[in-house]
Image (cartoon, rainbow, N blue to C red; front, side):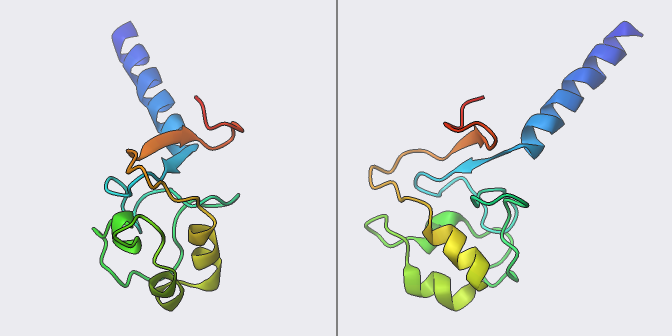
Amino acid sequence: MWRSFIWRSFMWGRELLEEESRWRIGGGESVYIYKDCWLPRQTTFKVISSSVFGEFARVQMLKTPSGAWNESLIRQNFLLEDAESILSITCSFTHAADSLMWHYEKLGSF
């Protein structure tokens, strides 16, 4: 019986971490454009624009081969609010890995 309580507690903690975290974009290979939380804003961290690229499209496809945002592609296919949020993210030109961060901590640390 106590194992069940502990297991439920672990699962609750995991859900809480997932709800309150978002992706820090590196290369964009691991993050889904429409399914994952990755935009830097206060309410929802998800894209609110209609899915143009399909539900399994990854953030990487919004970047140029050099690693910069493809601004014209983004502005043509996303609502203004989403486009501005995406373009406000500093691009990683070192092809760093995407990572989860705690949204409410200034440095993103857990």
